[in-house]
Image 1 (cartoon, helix red, strand yellow):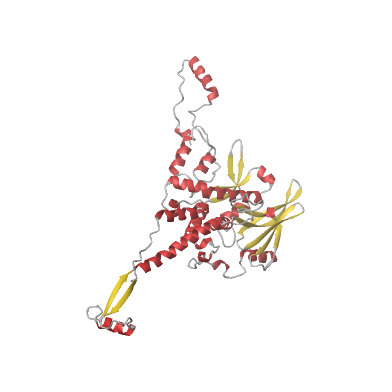
Image 2: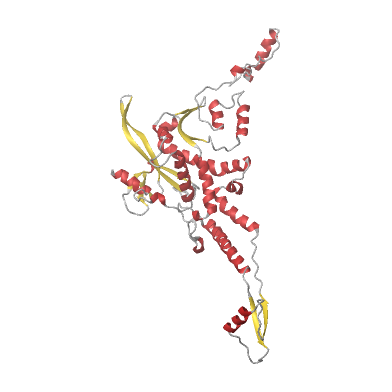
Length: 426
């Protein structure tokens, strides 16, 4: 195995057979000691899963987008060949997108290693080197250090355990997905380039205390508690009764009544369960879900079109745009981007609007070509098919409408539009 492959495997954690068999143990009480693992919470895991699952339903493609007229053509290149098959040895496109979204949401940064081969080519008699993509690897277990070497920004990658081979490469060769970019000049997250989960951890701690207190309160309420006071009748100076004697009287009693010459008085102590107001539980759940852009209907899986539209536009679409842009600026040169090379995502399964609403928009913009055919297909979640945009012949340019009517009147004709020709419509 080559040194480079060893380095990649080290960074991905593939050097240990059980690296991808690790699971988060949600049964361990983490937050009673103010732990930092937010994914130990079922609420957090479900919220993250909702976002990642919708992101993974999309397809991303390398395309050529030209203007005037607007046209989108799916490129026949090595990038699409990778995206259509195995993005890396253990991931298809769906798993790849899910993994990228998961790492980005939890860490606020996701680095993707771009594996490529350099192939010499000739263009107009000049020698060039073309990069042919072999795979894309989300770096889950790598420590990434960014630094400048002269005017060039570089990245130093090392396995999370601190051992193995350190890989040094230009930062421009890394696909860097940033969530919440702003506080740090280079990284997503807080000013230190990390995820700040302090507010969520406080809410999780409170919820954890409530969850622990409920069974204890219930158990206490079902137990018998009280004070037993006994006074002797036969012997006024006797104040105590032995445990053995008391049990003997109790067990020998036919009716479960203590038959003794000691006068006793039992004073019960009532312990009632504490009801947690529903508003408190709802508030905590909302506070935990809100940083991920997930509402309660989405969390419960019982949502309307409007609920899903808000969720898609708030949590899913921005992350997809970040992934697509991060891939574009790394996989293509400035010259290629200028000539229309880009990465686009298509939500063939994900729908920010209901299909009925999208179809209404597509039909309303068809007759006057307000949207081109590629744009309408994109609106409906379909890939471009390279077919031309067609419109009805019943419509003319408004700038020549008066001329058309005057010409028709001068010829003694009624200025009406020709009959609808359905074959001319799309």
